[in-house]
Amino acid sequence: MNKEQILKIFKNKNNRIIFIIFIIGVVLVLTAQYHKDTGGESAYTPTSAVSVQDEEERLAEMLTQIEGAGRVSVMITYESGTEKSLAYETRTSSRESSGERSEDRKAVTSGGEPMVVKEVYPQVKGVIVAADGADSASVKTAIREAVTASLGVSAHRVCIFKKEE
Image (cartoon, rainbow, N blue to C red; front, top):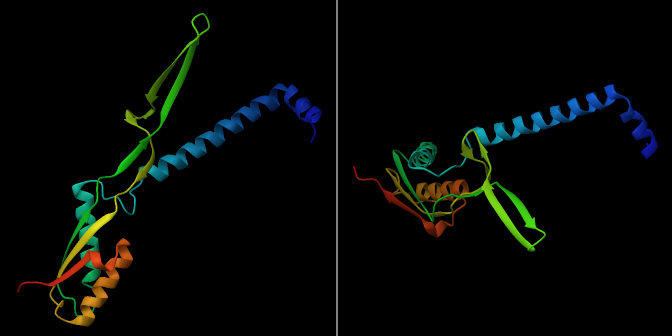
């Protein structure tokens, strides 16, 4: 299609309305998808005491499935907290007479909360595992491999101990 054909299509008022409705629909679908992605529970969100505890419980539950591990307790420590990058709206104004420019930067909100563009989760600092079967070298190795694989942490940052009876 060339430019003339496109202009001819948009000269018709009904075509313009259909195009505007189409654009609004696309924007609504993208907005709904964004809210679905950010509104749902993330698989890895160690941002609060509750989610850290949930992460530890999930890992402990998985480690108890290892043959010979028995009862397992897990403690995970993190380097820092979660870092969030917020969306900002910047308005620039300039005065021609004085040549001054000023910027007004304001956080974009959605539902009264600042809109988060990106979240960077903290790295795992270390993991302590206490297990009934940790006196067995093969169980210890299996637990260490499971922890390093699930949390992406180096093996030297994982300590495994036999649980007190």
